Length: 172
Image 1 (tube, one colour):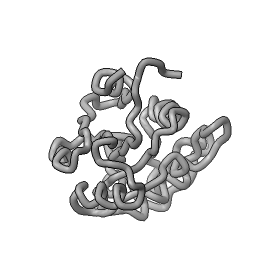
Image 2 (cartoon, helix red, strand yellow; image 1 turned 45 degrees about the horizontal axis):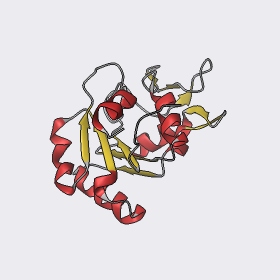
Image 3 (cartoon, rainbow, N blue to C red; image 1 turned 90 degrees about the horizontal axis):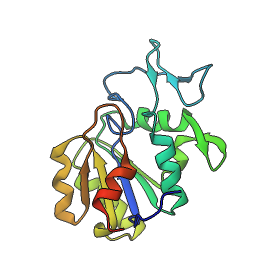
Image 4 (cartoon, rainbow, N blue to C red; image 1 turned 90 degrees about the vertical axis):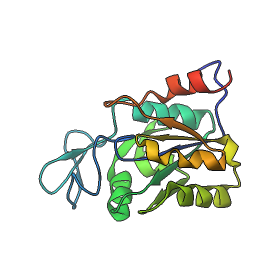
């Protein structure tokens, strides 16, 4: 358990190169199937692996433990495949293997502005934009700051240490 961090009400994640190391609409080809060796890994039509960065599941679980609303905002051109991957990928949630999508209260995935994703999350959840933190690897998505969202750009290529980011950027 993490101490001395004031968690936001809502943390929103991009998918591609934020939660997993690929573009779901470019680098992999459906159909996807679970790996025989690891339920948290999917294999695409050509044998390419799809999985979260190594620290993501633990981060999502910690945020869930802290009662943070978790969401996805992805401008992917393949929303069907993004959701399919999240449904097929099995990760430990509250002590048992469940589809990764169960971490997320809202999954907004379609091409277009992240502003639209956030407006839907706000309208459906009632959570104030100022109580949302957004992790993304693309600085162009900083536009959500105009709504009052805290934007934190993922700067490491191989993983996302959100807890360090939160500790450094949130009041504790």
